[in-house]
Length: 411
Ligand code: MLT
Image (cartoon, rainbow, N blue to C red; front, side, top):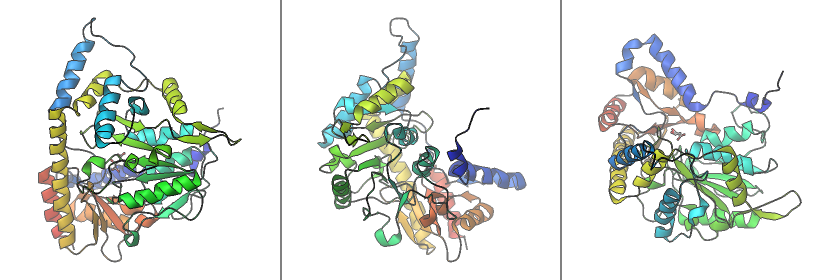
């Protein structure tokens, strides 16, 4: 009989969003009449149709595949040049960030990239995560055997947790101790917090002093409206030597179902061997993709490219403005009923303090039962998330307004 990966047995609960879906299913089985009224503000999944530019590009690409002269088989494992170049030029070089086309690696999304990156990092790394945290960073390290057992509060031995609280505006400062790898996510999922240039500069300085690698998740960067807030870690001096960035078209172009994202790994980022020899990480990442993947389908890459066309950019802006309009409505309503509200200004997530005495899951249950609204319990993102809940702004305007009306009557 084959041996199983026992690290999986350390994971205490199911992955957060399937767990929420399970509880909602259970509720609906008992309360079938609530199905029509139910509004989901839990998982951050987009609701609005794809930008027309992406649809047209996908159709054109499908037609190309239907003709011998324009048919394509396997594409380059790191993504087609047309897309890598559009990304590097528009998202970086146009913003005066010196990223080359071949430092872009196209993938089927950031969730996967955040876990795949462990393939090229040593098992002996000391890893830091924020608390609360996007659960993928933690669970994938558990699966890879980088942690000890789970503690009572759901945290794992062996990881360094950096508390993000109202006192530090949900932006962790670098730790006093040494870590080799740190995951940062800005705009933050789940708190909606953003990091200033100075705060990110302190992280890069830490990385420089400790020879650490920052894994920077910028999946929500397009939601930043404050011009002072950096969109990329590479806007910070020194980051080209110490960071890797994860980006996604999921929340920008409504691609959660289409699947496309990318990583940025500059040639100048080094990591060391056990014997202390410093080597660039990029060839390992290149090798990893060549061996384990054939990248994303041609029509999807053409659709992603179309998001960079003038009309594609306008259509993405309309989508983002729509979701941020929802965020404004939901944020204001939670404030009006006297709850402590964070985020939702440069991010599509609103992080809300539960009314006195309620745990995150109690709040989840009450909102589900009493107003038929699904939210995400803060404790699902880590021990410091206890006493908070997250409201996602990804919804139709009609639903966001209805949720606001129901929240107003929530006692
Ligand atoms: C979330 O709700 O946190 C996100 O949708 C999860 C994800 O993007 O994987």
